[in-house]
Image (cartoon, rainbow, N blue to C red; front, side, top):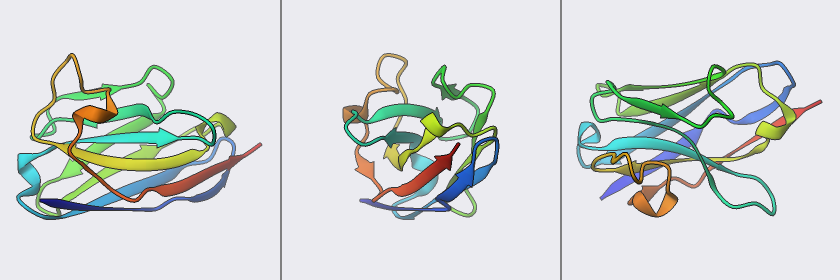
Length: 126
């Protein structure tokens, strides 16, 4: 079992930056690929980005490509989401999630992930 806890959310103006962190505890962090998802009010949870167990493979949603960067530090049991050039449409609750392995057919689907954090609110003002 893996416990995940996000932090780093907050209120930022459009064009600003935030870095989210997701700390993992429990079983070996490096045994899990990690993903970030977000959910805005009244909308379905959507894929943002994912990273493989080693960090060698990453995936991004088109809407964040070039602005967001996912990274991980297996020694610190933490995955990060650096968000730059934020837009009001990035406003959402951001969740990190863990899965043993990423598959090309499913890395973007929330049901593919086994463990989830509680989420952290990101609000971007215009």
